[in-house]
Length: 113
Length: 111
Image (cartoon, rainbow over all chains, first blue to last red; front, side, top):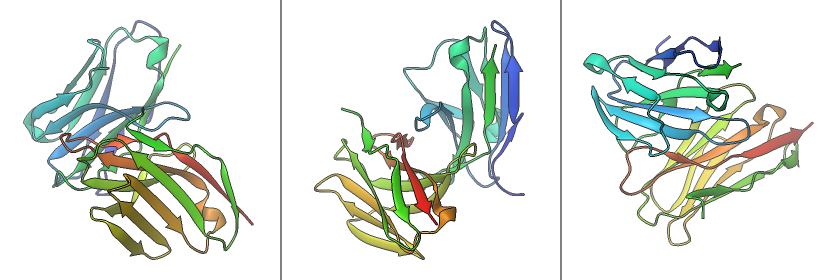
């Protein structure tokens, strides 16, 4: 399968715990995006990488959120001290050119209890 | 004003009819426009892209762009029950690298 891959698909965690999600983009894509989506809403932008450089972060992104993309390949998104409001679908997407559409992975559904 | 606005629906059309989905955007410098389909519980799937004014057709789908009116639409001809999904409009604002999404229009195609 050459699409965007995300792991895990589901994560249930207790409030206050840290969680980490992984995204493997389409291999030739150098642009990688993280989005968050809640029920009834469109995806909300979190952060953007071009190769290994994190070039954009949403102003809405709390300091508890951090993302990395070492060596410009896979990416990880970590949420520290999770809160119930962090419960959402976390989506990773990748694209080749800036003008092109982005292709999404299956998402990681996070539930904070 | 939201950057990308869509009617949330739900929009219901009978099987075989034309479904028309609309989207407006606020940034006049936007250059790239996309439609995504999202089935319940799944991730968004890219179905159409359009970059210049006019119509772009791909099978049963036609995307229409009017930059002067800041308006994008998606027509689905010969609608099928399998087209029932939420359709997301996405725009890349002029100075941005990321896509900005509307909240989606839920479409139901009735057999």
